[in-house]
Amino acid sequence: MHVILLFLVSATLACSQSGSRKTSSHVRIYQSSTKATIQMDRIQKSDDEWRALLSDEVFRIARKKGTERAFTGAYWNHHASGTYVCRCCQTELFPSTTKYDSGSGWPSFYAPVAQSNVENHVDRSLPYETRTEITCARCGAHLGHVFEDGPKPTGLRYCVNSAALAFVPKK
Ligand SMILES: [Zn+2]
Image (cartoon, rainbow, N blue to C red; front, side):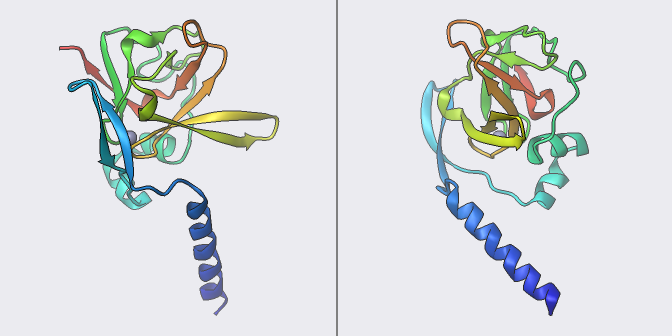
């Protein structure tokens, strides 16, 4: 009986939490192939569905807001021309033309492919610092954080986990 009650309470909490967030099932995503922003369905999968598609490391970082160790990811020291896309849903996220060496040990960009493709969220998970989390607009994958100590022209530093990205070389 207690177990059932607990389940009901947590289910109710989960509903109220998701209710307070943006729940639109559509999102506008920019595609460089057509240079157009088009309306697409958000991708929503359960943890089990994502776990079946992703490695343990990618699942931990992209779906559970983990962080890879600095200087260990595939892209912090990667300089090829192309586009970094979401590892989970292939949405275009960052062009190599806005990538720069921040010295942080994580891939760093001063701007995304398009503002619409990356969403910002207030992150109070650290007790001493309020940060801005960045996620993939289409599937909600945790990418990293954006800080205001980047180079011109934006002054922003999008600090991204390599594990949340895949790289598509320029043709
Ligand atoms: Zn995605």
